[in-house]
Image (cartoon, rainbow, N blue to C red; front, top):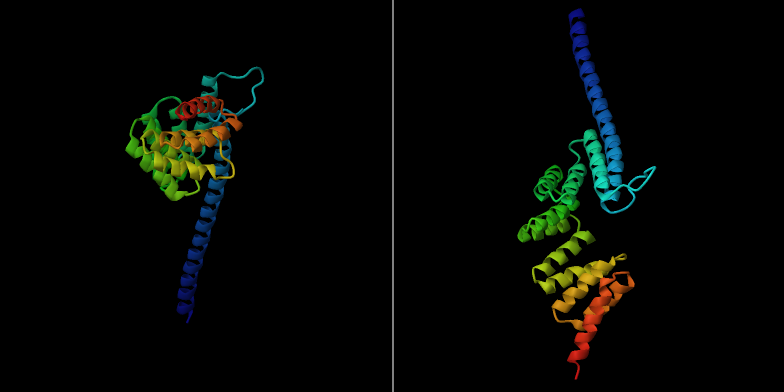
Amino acid sequence: MNQFVQEAAQWGGLVLGGVGTLLSLAGLVSNRTTRRKAQRIESNELLDRAWDIFAGRSGSTWLFEQKNEAERIEEARRLIDKAFSLDKRYPKAHMYLGVYWQFMGEYQRALICHQKAIELDPTYASAYNNLGRTNGQLGDSKAELESYKLALKYDSDFAYARYNLGDALFRMGDFDNAILQLEWVTKRRYCPGKVFMKLGDAYLAAGYKEKANIQYRTAAQLGIAEAESRLEKLFAQIYSSSP
């Protein structure tokens, strides 16, 4: 009987020990997840500041005078490097590093960064969009189109990727399909003037002068100065062709 009790106690100890080990592992995973979330939050803050610089916004405050463009871009690089130091497997950090290399004209390096972001997250629509732009900068039209289509596959409401697809189709002379993509973007709640401008160009290239006229007028109202000269040329064309 005593031997049975001893053996039972030993087995019980093993079971309790196993439960304790599992609880310890669960706590370790939980702590690691919490730490990863905190790192991602801090990384996002750094990357958002870098994006403000890339997008021409303030990005940060300087005490004495505005920094020149080169200094601003290098400040963005420092912010991205700091985000990397927190989490080297964060897809967004790899993509932003790719955007930095695009700004520097190092398109092959940018390509590698965007591909790494996609390797870490195969559904990352923004990385596909930036990969498309980089492929376009490298002159690979086929890869550019495929990248934009993949961006839209994973985010069908991604207006910027759809605009880029329309712009690429326009440059390749596929005006009808370019119009379809650009028309979709202009129906969004907020649409920049440059989209109406590009749609006007696509309409004009496809021979729809009246539709082009409407788009150029909208672009002009939204502050696109170039639209005014387009309207003048279009008016001259219409006037010269009238009986």
